[in-house]
Length: 494
Image 1: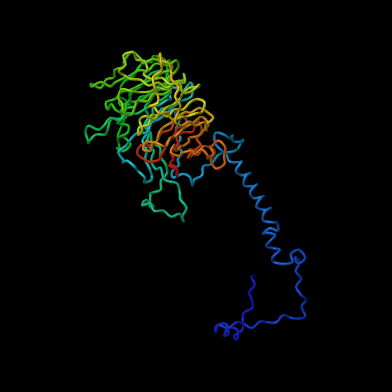
Image 2: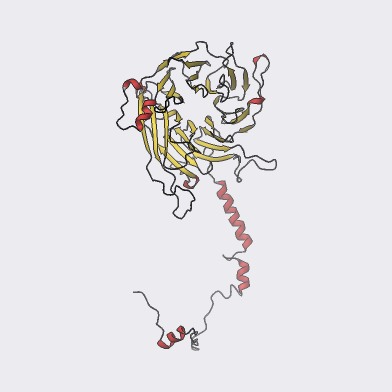
């Protein structure tokens, strides 16, 4: 039973109601004095204050706290630098993400591309919807299970926020939803090394824009598909995709049996113009004809000593493109050249140059990523032809060696030419802000952590990440593909 205190008498209650203080009761003189067992230890309040809250001098306690704090800092886990012990896993900090979703597929995908849609630009409301296309990498011996996947990712909600978190957004009553991955399958008989999409502008407002894909396969073939009906079927109840609609418009065999990874559509030629590069160093140009057919120039562009790893069209000049190779060079070409030789050749690495991205906002900036983990930004205005066709060696305007494994993907932000996304073999997808300048007196370390440059905005952990792309219509949204499937996220940093 709980004990109740003695209740005051009527006289005492009347006195209290009148605002009078109760009379003090004198202590019984017969009771012995209370003995302070700490009396000998602390003689006065002054001594207690001087000794500190835990009985030690403040200086000693603060020194120990600082030591403990430094020990914690030294234990900061950096993905790609530190290895997980057996049984350990990494968990993301939800407070650093606006949106974070992971979606799995039947087989991993080495490559994918995000498709523009009719849902509007500069979308900030949730749940978000994304349309994309990818190709699978089935296990050896099961190549017939490969497929081209036309995908719709919907129900991509924002991260849950604390109940007491205030927000000025107009979307506070956003619908909560579970992420859903829908896909339309197109059978393939070989692994997709690289896939890129091209969308022609609408000629009739009643019909959707034509969406074409170019798939560079492990067998060396390049498959052209029209996936317009597959995309339309997601939002058309009862729509049926016929077998004929899933067949390629054209199968290009100019690479014969030599596989490749370099594919890019021209952004300046609406009907469709395609570049493909292979492991023998050959680059072919294929153009869509007025009748809807496909014509490939049988004479390739040559000049690389090893495989062509990446190709990018110029965002502003319809006859200019660049290529990156495992010979360590980046070359710039002009389609009008009768010799089919490069106009510029620059040696930028002693290892393979795996990936490249041409800025669509500042067309003289080119970002590259190499096999040694270094990535850099180059000013093409500084590239000059060298004598006798040799490779020149200009300096990058920015260079970073944060990653310790090969760079697998790199891409400029579509609306901010200072932001770059980089994926690497150290299981990380990092975001960088090149607008952050480094003063001479400033350390190259961030927050006292060695080897972390101040331009590094964000580190996202993703196992065996192979490729990443920004969404062109959802600001700050980025999508990556890796061993465990697809990751879609938006951080508080971008």
